[in-house]
Length: 303
Image (cartoon, rainbow, N blue to C red; front, side, top):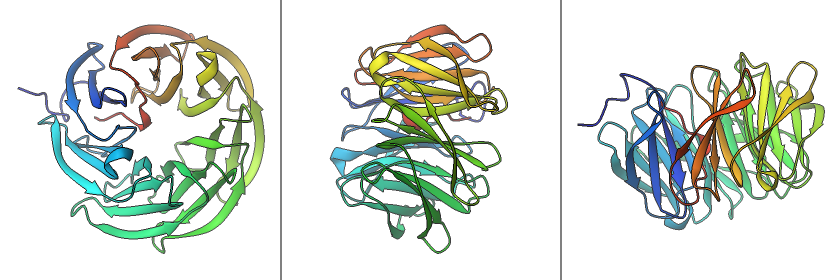
């Protein structure tokens, strides 16, 4: 019988794009407990705050799939557009946001009814998404525009846009929602943005093709996946300097910190596995086999 997401260790939901599956990792045992078929080349992932649902973007199925994490199966499919990639859920669990890579829009979906609440014009090729802790703001990386937009979630419109590096992709907000960290794939750096005024505070150089970011240890360290380097850069968020470089698997992409705020999980595309980094000693503590094309783009942890 499947373990309830409300009991025991948190689970990680890793999209395996080439396998068209999602691996469910029990982080207490380090074992993949279930492998869930998800058609449509699953890429992005967002988990509801209560851990009961995992929302999986499916670019080739024109939308996203809803996984019931207790039953560990797809219970619904929502069709939006052909370019669905980045996906996020609001901290209150009421809204799901999906970035449409081809149509330059972000779609807001009511989580209870799975009906479309609105469509927002974004920049070119919107990708990574993050919602503020108070549910008020949605941030979107516009890859081709080299910018990040701040969206009013009540009015469903862009209120401000800040410049980023070349080809921004993955985003991370700090715990308070004050700072946004943006991985820029083409310029090999991270843009640090103060969210209230959408002002660029700094640009931090990392390694080759940074894809996504994650914070750990009370927001004191930022971890950045470098796709073409097989590594994760570590940035001290006070000094905004790189303090470490950790070898992981080949083509690391999605990265999220465990709710314990210490263990950082990295999905490695070419190796089809997940590296677990100890944020304190900056070493890989373990590796978990998942599936082909492990991407894990988004917030893949549940309760």
